[in-house]
Image (cartoon, rainbow, N blue to C red; front, side, top):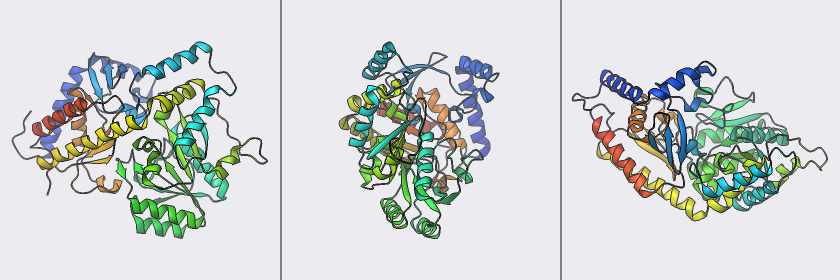
Length: 441
């Protein structure tokens, strides 16, 4: 499709309308299922991030890094379950491990052979984790980490970053969600060294914790600057504030976690997503003196329950994937492919003079249709999100499963051929819509 005149809002709206029409025509079964689901689920949906207009595709199965939908299409999966699908959609070692415990019984109501092994493997790999506790999601892990920090320090407040995301009730875009947990939050700007330092010093007596992703995931795959992290470590140590790295996503960016890659040792780390091997998982860990407060044999121990904290499926799948599949070499290869993909997309945008950039680290990245450097979510607030909407639907029509917010997450099965095919199709998109995409100044 070609648009001869320079880009205008009318032309962009017309392009989106045409793409939606073709998307709807190509996916009648997904549309019908979406409409039927509305009878029981608000908006036909039970997980907001999976919704997009005009309706989300219904996924029926997957293998390796491919997905199948209800209308019989196959996609190369660049969503990877928002980083949780690191192992792909059917890894033989993990599948066999899950089958073996399914045959031996589940919901057993006692310690099992796998939880301590997984805990030992996590402690051995991540420098900042001396002890670890399991839970059921990254959201829960962050809630437990923050509540622990408040209990240990006796202080009420949490410093967070505008645009940050730490779970469904810990979301901080545009001032935060009305559903957020009722902690007293103090907002800072990501990568703002002077401003954040001043806030920490101003509120030192009331701050229990500072929490951040060392590379924002949901906030747009924006990497923290090294001197910003160093400042946070120095100032929190000075004031006795607990520094928490949310590594639910970023732990996949280095074999030792992002904090191991950055040579910064936070007091606590939260984990989740892929470490469960495809099953529900969360964990919070850190300094032994903090985590040992959860020792039930100790006087005045913190209570920590959760029926499925050590469920046999997550423990088995997690241990198998973490120790047998997620080798340092495999992780390094995946992240190197991601670096190559991001570099190529940025070169394509520059060559066509499109106002756009792809931010991120390794296997995680985000396309933004903005001009200039992106160092915080504030830098993309003025972006016209219709360009990403058009991009997503057009890439779906080209057999590439991508997110509505422009985020891309690779998985271990990806090959250089997958990356090459994607960049060819991205180039086609840029060419087809060159007259209406925003241009660099």
